Amino acid sequence: MRIAGQAEPSVRFAPGCVVEAPLGAMRRAAEVLRAEGVDRAFFAGGIGVSMKAALSSRPDRSFARALRAAWQGALRPGDDRLLRCFADEMGRLGVRIEDPTPFIRDLLAGEGLLAGPVLDDAARADLIVAARAAWEAGEEDRGQCALAHRGAVVAREGRMGTDALMARSPGPGAALAKVVKPGQDLRFDRPTIGPRTIATAARREVRVIGVEAAGVMILEPSRVGALCRAHGVSLFGLSAQTDRSFF
Image (cartoon, rainbow, N blue to C red; front, side):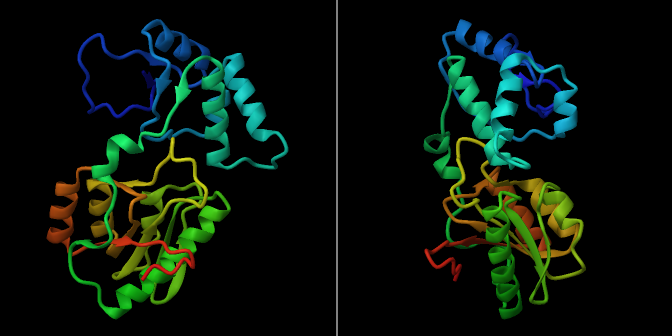
């Protein structure tokens, strides 16, 4: 099952194995899955669409009910709250959304230097600043990333996305941190990096990328490592302790 207009076109599936549904057609999606004997599912990937676009897609009653639940008592629901409400509604329709972690453990970041050059003191200091800022953004459900340069926070992710955040890099040597939001429901929206992240970092002169160990997923890790070495980008696995000290 894939959402119309959201799936990556380069991903190929066997003929007859994929059903596409509009963003707002939750009931139809659940009915198709149940007809195939599916009673549990996993989310994969993100939704690159605004709330206005979602509402203009003629949502069905189930989708509208999930939206109402997300807005109940909230001035502006964060991504995590919205996704929880969508998952709850899918469960009500007979398809339980589950955590894919048991199937992706080999893709989760390890600790310490994962690829690229060893960090010097300046890079390490900037990474600490970026990591703490990323935690703060996550606590407010406003994103999972932050960018730092020369000891100061340049920007936090908000709703702009990682690539757009790196576009704000002020010059050579910036540090990017990507972490799991405190209390995040890891059934969906797990923070992820991949080859495109490293290529963008190199283009924007981001010197180091820190990812939370055992939390952030690394897609195509061998390609990521090769790109880090080729472009001189350090990839570091952050160890989140109870005092939120990453080193």
